Image (cartoon, rainbow, N blue to C red):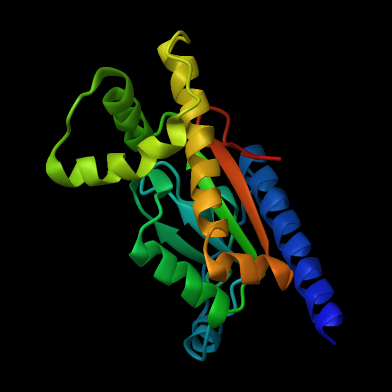
Length: 205
């Protein structure tokens, strides 16, 4: 029975990932549905939600997950915080998505040119201090940037740091008992980068 449930959850996660990929392809082609929601749909959503994916993304106004994945109301459970950082509050939201909403797919979504990651690089490489609350965000990101080569160009540094930060968030999730139990049960955790200039979402391997 456990194997069957695990296989079913993995299948649902794979299907969810494919839906995100296809939605982003529609968005890039300018064929996004962006459908209006009728009263009947709202009435159904009032009864409860069954999102097929949970997205941990950045607060950046240029990166709205519902639009770039061409998703409708009720399809995505979204947690947004600058730099897609991990905190107790974020982990609580992710735990809720797993335990109560049973989403089979979790995606950590970074984006090119992330300001929070740039601030973390400035602190790491030039010891620049930021305003206290921003520094709290920076301190969450810096540990994941150990491998960034200071000899690279600023653009290359930021590009590599954005990806490193996504992987760092994934690492932190997988370090928790909840993350480990979820993946053992068949849930899928993926990292991705939204390329603002092309509107393409690149999933990490």
